[in-house]
Image 1 (cartoon, rainbow, N blue to C red):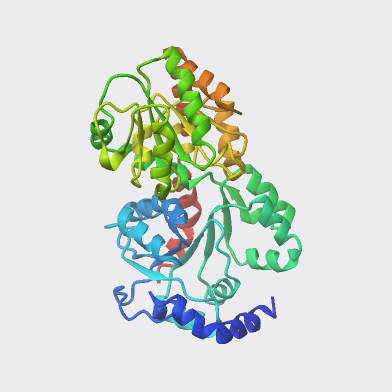
Image 2: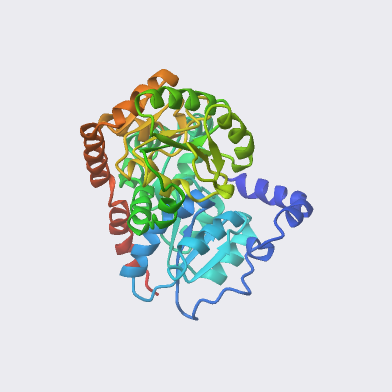
Length: 416
């Protein structure tokens, strides 16, 4: 750890011209200069750092709870990416008091940032470990927490090459509030002090349930209006649409009124996906929707979650090809029976837990997908999936409250 400050400072000075070009947006803030930030004088904020879009979503239920619970305490959010800032503007408007870009972990920048921000408490979300800032917070008696802490197998193997460095870095946190059992086991295997570790659950589930409660399905009901049950193939990758189409062809032999919405993971692929679909069925792009479609190819972002809300079953892509899979929790929160391929490395925990309650099912090819879709037309099958999903989310929800219960005593002790 002794070499870390010198290495970071050397890199920063050498890379300064490149950094100035690459990070023009928020460049002053990344250097610890906050001319545009307005926090009332004498008020010390709760500072939450969420690197990008996914971490902002994870942080959102905790920030909402803090807004409801902590009275007039200022809430400050930092991100690294512009897309993270945009997500914060969209889902946390009226919740946070300010946003800044995260300061680079160089000693004089960290010192300048902390003198300007004077945080009452610092919270890092998921994987953001910057030892220079954490050490400086400790010198100022500012408690630091890691929330929704996760440690993938890949990161664990990498960190295991320098375990003493990472043990010292994680040691700067007062508490490490961990997302799941698998993460907890890896933190312990890395040698993190057990008394710092607590299993609190996944904040993303609280965020998803909040989104589900606020969902307005009016638009998707309009664009999917028609006779027959709707199936959704969400976040598909190249090589999967052909399998989905063959499964749909088989399904239509049993359920001739069935319809399909295909949502490519990358919207720029929509035209080529449409061409493939048109070889087999009347098909339309969402943006140029025509009546009489059997397959609707969605070429706009932001609709997939709501589409799951009007479907009878879903296939989640990135999983029949080796892409690591996509988010299973979004269709699951609607109580849908859902299927995915064997490649779910990025969402292995969700796949395992949802399979245990009868919600998620593995399909290897078009024949298995078609059989699963046929099963999904059965009311009893749908009810079992809905009950399983309800039990899953009831057990998994509430992470924000558990996290807050660990943080609140430190906030009360550090009010000045």
